[in-house]
Length: 561
Image (cartoon, one colour):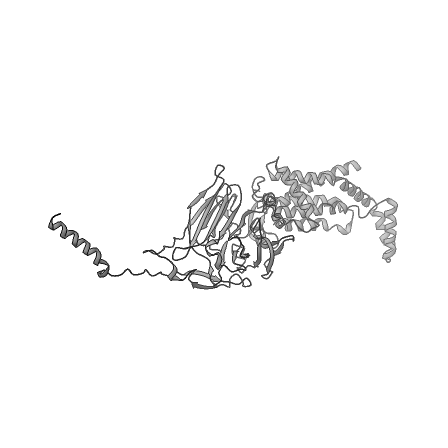
């Protein structure tokens, strides 16, 4: 080794030894505390009364957090697309809320080329809040996701979306998993709080909130809500071994505790359930709507809470879809009890009509034809009572001259007049109430039809013929440039046919009693005005019944001559 080489090695060694003393010491990188929006809430507070605060979601002192030379960068806010054979959805990585949920089977009233969307823009739903012992709340954080989109079909039937929520230093706080299925409107949610388990509150440590209800789906092109959809908006809670409780917009907010199986909120045809098949929520609170009725969403929501469990992983499921009796029954959690079948005395008729119509529809594709067939079946079944009524009316017609004589004979004595009239009925074998029975028997069936056509999703968008393209809506042949009180501006052919057939049907049956003469003019007009805004399926059923009875009456009258 020559002299120059030795000198070079000496200088390199000297630099290595003295470098740490002359170079500046490495400074610890300060941790910039990124604010996380939290909501310090109380279950008894109204859903809009949240005091927004800015705190730092840290579980350890800052000096105990090991940080590299670069800070953790929070993810950008984005939407993850989910598409199955049943729906198309957007899930935000901010809080994991649903931004859009479009049902593929049903079309918008406003534009038939568009799918209905159950989520109104900028509303709060599926909001998760995690409460810590130090008084802080983890809510509204932005997550890292394992996927940007999920596409399911018959060959790829389910998939998980994983959202990881971290603090400003990059430490994992909790994980939220969604599992979607191709053949279900429901999906599973799992919240894993393992990293922060020791810091959770013991009671009501996790809240799941659906605050603003659902978007209305029955809005027409002029912004009018069809068929009083706001009338059907409600929230529900089901406690183990008890019947569900329902809350409408006139009820105050109420806190329910116990083993909560599910909470729900609905519109006319669609419903949201948050449920736990294997366990229970600890409390439920309903939130009445605080939005004007002119808004295009219900505004009625609820909150469910979970206590701190031995297992840091909490599981529940969410159903967001149609109020289809068959689908709701398949969950075996009494979801179908929220369907509106009318008063208890009417419910058996409503269910019988519903099951008959859906059974016939398996073999006849057109629901209009099904309704005509049902009307003919029902009127055939009550035919014996109707024939008896016609005979009673014919007998009443024959004794009218005698009744007139009695009225003249006992003009000043009503008691003797009534006594003599009853003896006359007995002598000729006439039952003055015989014509009422055929009218009373079909009434529960008619009420049941009103309920079935008014709120059963099977008839939403059910086509019949010509301009009658939706049997759940009033028929509109044309619209007047002005509105008639009670009747409205829409003119339908079926209500007019119903009124005309009713007039001819009553023309003969009521001519026997002069006191009822005005009824044959008043009733058809009254029902025409009243039924004009009812579901066209109901009016079709009633009109076919009128035609059946008219023909039947003609044959009966001819055979009696």
